[in-house]
Length: 309
Image (cartoon, rainbow, N blue to C red; front, side, top):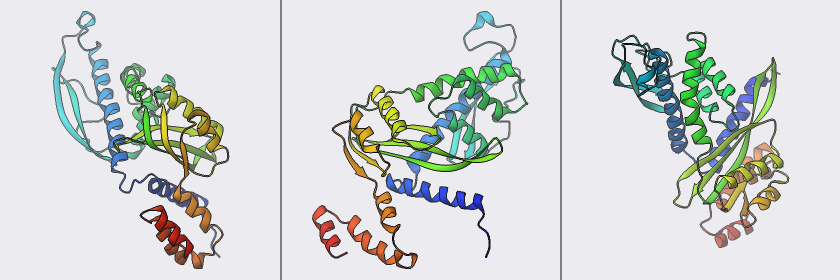
């Protein structure tokens, strides 16, 4: 009998959990999420390039009193780079002498590495300090640029990240999906388990909005309570329906902040809990019967299908 590969099993489990979560929030093609991520990556790249040129020239835009060079800005060149989220349109700044050599997106570079994308997205996670973001910028650049360049780029990017983290939210959301994805990461030579929290809200006009992303040691109702309080402080006054899993204490945490919210357990989690006690050979037949219940057009039809289950 062949031994199971722990890393392969962890990757398979992570993929399963991500797939289930996307299904639970009604995202079948992740187009909306991809567009959001693409915009976030684009903002960091654009501001990073502007910071590089500022370091090259030694003065910020319109700050001519501190200009100590005969070189100057000379407009922008349009550039398209490929990413895992789709094509990203950038305006690469130019200098009049042509001395500026972009480092974040080099000349003739047409695609981003997945590692850079991950670092950029992680900068948007709540709770990252200035030093954390500067460390990420240093990781992206490596040793190819000076500390002053990293500092300049950080100063350009930090306001963009903070603005997204602190942006006002809608006062009312029709539905808010809250869940945590558990995955294994390497830390100090060991494989440890982390929980990636995410809250996705559906506005009254149907537009989906990522309310925040957080990294924690493990999923807990206490952590969710702090997240809900922070969303209320950001302007959320009411949530009509909260879709969550069966985490102990979760409903109580929601009711403490939004007492009028109707709590609905995620269908994917309900189905998963149902199949836990069924043998593998009977799963397919069970799922066919369950589908008629959950896919019913109204409650009366669902009850009828449940009677014949």
